Length: 64
Image (cartoon, rainbow, N blue to C red; front, side, top):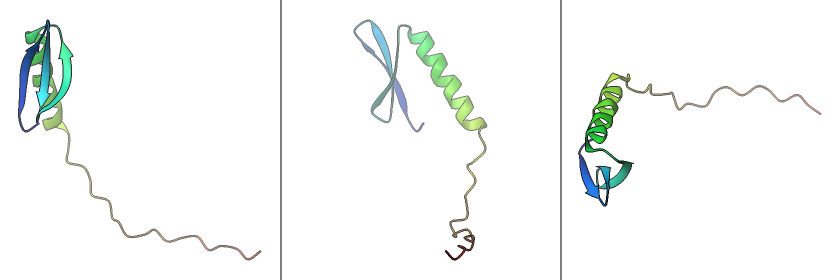
């Protein structure tokens, strides 16, 4: 997440990431903990492997 914020809307707290509402919880402390957990998980993932976009060899089609 590039930027996030926690805003209060009514009785709930809403986690916003890049100006999009992502999550609604009842506790500001819980919202902050979830944001921290998500950041740890995102940083722990290895970068996605880039797949070769060349077409795979097709199996020959038998004559009918």
